[in-house]
Amino acid sequence: MAVIDWEQFNDNFQYYDKEVIKEVIYIFINEYDSRISNLQKDIEDIDYANLAFHAHSFKGVIGNYMAPEVYELGRKLEELAIAKSSEGIPELFDKLKIGSKDLLIELKYYLQNLEE
Image 1 (cartoon, helix red, strand yellow):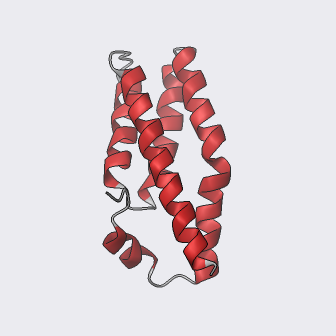
Image 2: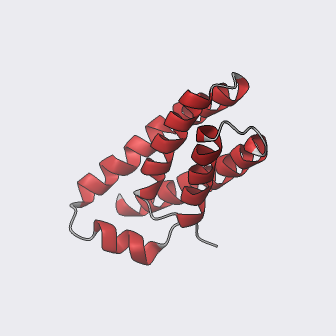
């Protein structure tokens, strides 16, 4: 099952040059590890302010790729951080890591096809 809503994705990027789309995807790929690391550190440090900031930022980036389920995980993580509620954060973060990794894989596959 696709993580990305490809109909929405294509509608969203229909007016963009192929090079712009590739650049936007490369940014996500290149920033992915540091974004996950920041979230992990915030959770370990119980730093709700930074967790809310990083979750919000990551959620926004994910929103560009029309991945509604992964976006929702980011939104919920941000919401818990704002509420300073640790209950469920580790499990939610694990789901976000899995979902965002699946998104990353789909984008890499799409990118590979764009470059052919």
